[in-house]
Length: 256
Image (cartoon, rainbow, N blue to C red; front, side, top):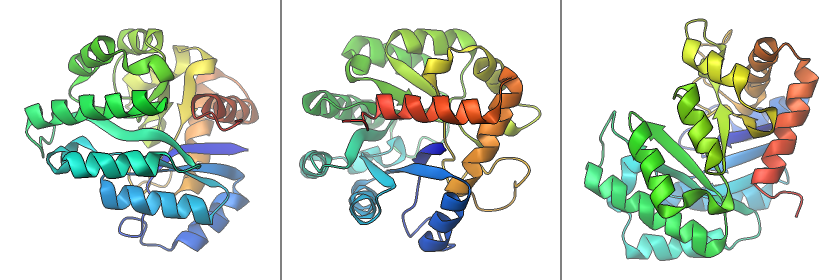
């Protein structure tokens, strides 16, 4: 059975119909899905979905794209949301120096504020990092951001960076790009990191894996990510499914 550790099931994104997507996920043996917030409204919707469906858990936070929206009122509301029983982490948070949709100083401030929020609540964090690898690592070290565990979502860095991040307490999660033939860097990391730090995700509706590129992504397709990693590790896909689900339960503390 599979765990999709990072999906966006909010209605504004998942336009194909949630019920049908969940049925297809169940048929593909995807039994646990983390619905990730990216602003206050989407975080609220993630919590509502987690309350409605037993297989869904919520992660709440403000994405670096929307960092300029993170005022004290939003922080207070996130704190309340994060205390709901099925909210398992703070995210997705981090830095995005590729699109720069919020000013970089604003992104930095929002990142640190939400790290501190997670620490106050003793929850792991889910990090978005695009073209900001060294600064993300420096922030993690300075703020001791991995003190409650965390996930590097849709990892795009090289192997030495992954090793440094794992030393700080982070798991490394792979999405559709690991199925792409030219994704040599992702292949190297997925093939060599310890199996107890490995996670899989879809980031749906984005980053659809091969052989389905061009379609909207959904949780059922996380199986293709697992299959690609199984080939890289030369292991049965069932073993990758088991290990990544076990790792997800550990970092998100689902067994509690």
